[in-house]
Length: 311
Figure 1: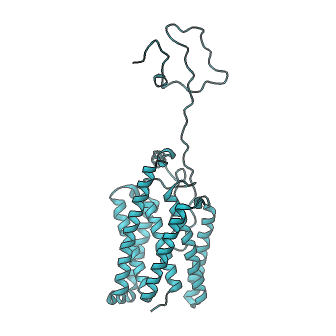
Figure 2: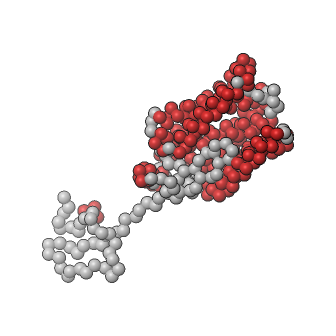
């Protein structure tokens, strides 16, 4: 209980007090019986909502999708995003836990993918089977698209355990099967070289994003343009190569894809790390892992096309 002989502390103020006085102030009586003149309330600072940002146009392959509270969210989603405002996201413990969780999931995904690639590359009967039965590849591609779109577009399955882990596992297996099938077409030496180059590029980009002050998340328009260029180039390349194989056109498309997805990897890495114009909500660790893993796999496939000779 507060001491009646002392002025009331701030925490004893009426919570229904309207805050800042209107222009001109309130009229105060000269004497209040048994009390003190009321202290003017201080305006309470509020937290701004993180700005939303548009999603870049996807290329010929499914692209990592960008998220931001305030764009395309319904009332329930907005309430969830507001629970992680700047104050809580700036907490080092929250951010470090989120980053650790994302990169743990990515490490497991990459280990599974490398294991599948190794089986398809070094076990000759398996490689021969997938090359002769391409329908299996297209089935895995359909599973890949379905799980990717579900995780990218549906907040419920993406955030609800264990469905998010189950869908991500199916997605990883489908992506690994596709990548293993592609790798089985190339020489073993080329696959190993592409893996090494991809690992060096991915680690270098991650370290660069940790150290640099350049904010890739503020360049959403640039990444939208890159996505459109990739989409148009992919369509043109697919049409032309279906009639006649042109080596230099294939190499240009592969080089463009490797460069674009390296930039996308930097963009998605900064979304996960935070302290940038745009960030991913700490609850969307599945989204962060999905985007970075997809970037790394596409970098590998494009590098493999550049350095590899088909069997």
